[in-house]
Amino acid sequence: MKMVRIFLLVSFSMAAFAASGVQEHRVSFPISELKELDMESAIGVLPLSMKEVAALPLLSADPALVQKFIKQSAGVFWSSFYISGKKFGYSSESWTQEDHNGRPVLKRHSEIFFPSERTKHIFSTWFEVSGRGSIIEARYSVVKKHVTMNINVAKRGGQWVAVTVRNGETQSEKTLPNIEETLFNNDFAFRALLAAKQVKPGARYLLKFFSPEKCKDELTGVQLLASGTEQVAGKVVSCYKTETLSPGSGQIWKHIIGADGFLLVSRIGDSVLYSVNREGALSADDGLGGLFEKYGHFLIIGVVLLIIFFAPVKQWLRRMRER
Image 1 (cartoon, rainbow, N blue to C red):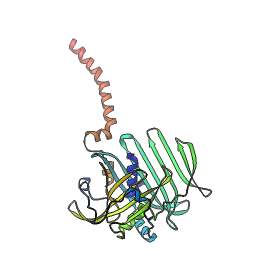
Image 2: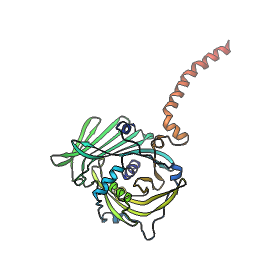
Image 3: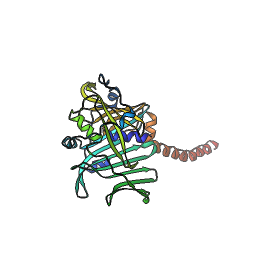
Image 4: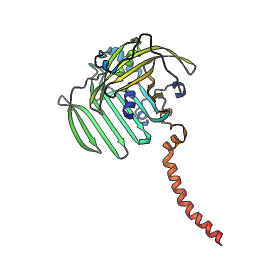
């Protein structure tokens, strides 16, 4: 459940990226400032309910707006995830333009890490940048200790097929219905509208998100609750407040998004996702618990070596006293 929460937010908004030439998208606000960042809903804007989500109008953004937003979205976006004030994990997301089997595409790539569970989740989706902006391939990988599982979703003979491989061995193949998420009806398209200032408080849409992990489209309802300015770290910041409802998981998140369309902070109950820079994402949680999470294996080795070394020293000292 915790992993699902994080990825839903990562989709809304590593050294491997640096190696590929993708630059980090830095944010200038420390978590201590983002903790207090919030906005009241605009007058007359009522909360969206789960039962209303399926009947919302499907978002269909102007392709020209999305193309413009694509150019603004180059880079890596880092986030840290906290539960009850303690850091639980971190994530990175990138949007890059590249060639995929000889055709121009936009690639969405997300990596989610849970250090305490030694688990990493990797999601990659390729969209065509022309035409309908359809998905042409999607992949999901999870690495947990000594187990690696991969799910690859692609068309074969005009039919969508999902192939699951576990530790190098094919486990299953199954056909899927048509994938409905596109570049123009997902969270990326909605953020493009926010960045273009084409959404007013109270506007509601149905968004599509294809999960390669679950091999199906997930429905999400989104509403713009407010727009305006807030004081953050002594600066006046233009931002939006939105809510997203996911009937599949039963979760309702509240988000504060910058005027550029990029996530600043998201909340549900005692769980919070903060947009940070790379150093903030990779840093251990504050306190002894976080230090042990990051350096615990060194401490354990040190204790073992101390025991091994101290036992003979203690015996030698005893013999010296007996003399």
